Image 1 (tube, rainbow, N blue to C red):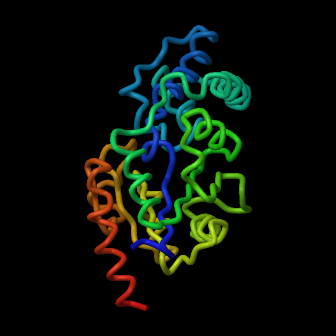
Image 2 (image 1 turned 180 degrees about the vertical axis):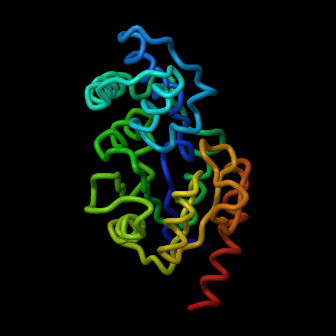
Length: 226
């Protein structure tokens, strides 16, 4: 039923709850500098914006300044060595991927996480086998919110952007999809959903069990438009 359709997923905060391992990496850097660790809940919203945003937010919380480049380098060393200690797919994610694949959909990942880290994470969690293509922040010359990041990974997967859907958790994901003229589905359980005055997704789900019943109406709209 979904043959010829490409479903594209964001990674952190959408497919996988990576906040625990990312926060652990941040706190490793902070404590070795003599700063207090930050609680996961306090830094959660910054997780989806990347490591630098997490470091900036942590320093803002501590009221200090430091060498951001060096902190980032140390963060990445720790994170790469501990990339899937506590990170896990969100409830229902694997089952949803299996159902979509069984229905003929092509699956891809579009993330602003570095490509090699994204591949490491997916392989560690045994999720890599579900995806035909992956584009990280450094895969192309552009990254989200540039629409070329999304349309580029759809092309890598052998798909057509006119038959694609983006699933994400942030305003960046929704903005990217809109710019690419691709319907979007927001997961409400992610790290940084857009505020009410922000970009509006075409559908919102509270659990991956509801993914397909929102995918099909969007595909019908695409069919009518084409």
